[in-house]
Length: 332
Image (cartoon, rainbow, N blue to C red; front, side):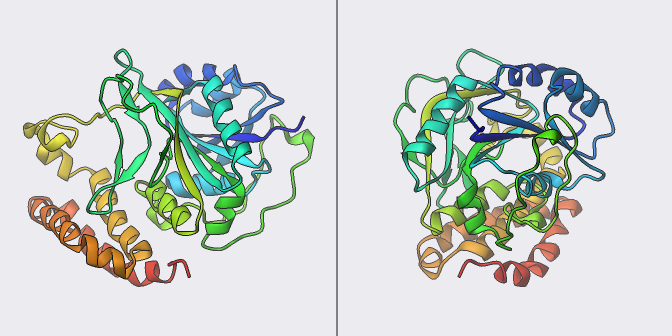
C-alpha cells in the first residue's frame, strides 16, 4: 500500500528539540507515511541528529533559511502523497491521532485541512491548541491555549485555520489555492527514499513573503474562501514544547515587566506586518463593514506600542509598501 501521508518535519537550529521529538517519528509505519526532514539552513547538529535517529527519512537540505513559509513550500513541491502534515521541530507526534485525521480526510473529499488536539509538553493535559479561530479583528487565535483539558473541546468543529506547527492538509486543496497553481513534479523514484531530494522554489502555498508567522492563518482563510472545509477533530495528535505560553497581561504571553522585550522582538514585528498583509489579501467588502472597528482598534494599539520601539515602528513602512503586491495575490 502506497503511503497516504508525508510528514514534513521542519528544522532550524533545533538540535535540542529534535533529540526529544524525532524518536516519536520512529513509531510511524513506513508503509503509511513518508517522513521528510527539511533543514532550513541550520548551523548546528540538527541534520546529523535526524540522520542518526531517522535514517529512513527523506532529507531536503536548504542552504539558507527560507523561513517557515518558503521551507514548507519547498517540501510541498516534491510531495507525492495525497496528504501532508506540517510539523514543527518541537512537537512530538502521536501516530494514533494522526491516523484518525487521515481517516477523516478519506471520508470527506471536501475537507481541505484538519487538526487534532495538541498538549503542552509541560504540565498534565494542558492544551496548546485546539485549532485556530478568527477574532473580531480577523486575527487568528489558538483555541484552548494554556487551558487545562476538561473536555471542553470534544466536538468536531469548523476552523478558520489549522496550526502550521501540526496541521494536516489535502494536497489537492493546497494546489487549488496556491498563488502560482504550480504543477507538482512527478513522484520521485523509490531509490530516493532515505536520501536527499531536491525541490523547486516556484510553488507558493504558504505565502513566501510572510517568511514566518500568520502564514498558516492566511492559508486557512484562503482555503475557507475557496470552499474547502477546515476542521478540528477531537483526537490527541502531539505534545508541544512551546517556549512562550499565553499568560500574564492581556493573555499576551508575558508579564508587565516584559512588555518592552516583547515589542522589540522580531516575532512581533513579523506578526504585525503579516497581519496587515493578510487583511489586504483576503478581506472582503463585507468583512470591512463588519469588522473594521475592531481592526482599527487592534492596529491603533500596535501603533501606540510601536512608538516605544524603532524595530516595531519601522514595520509600518514595510507593511504598507507591500500592500499592492498583496492585492495582486488576492483570490479571484
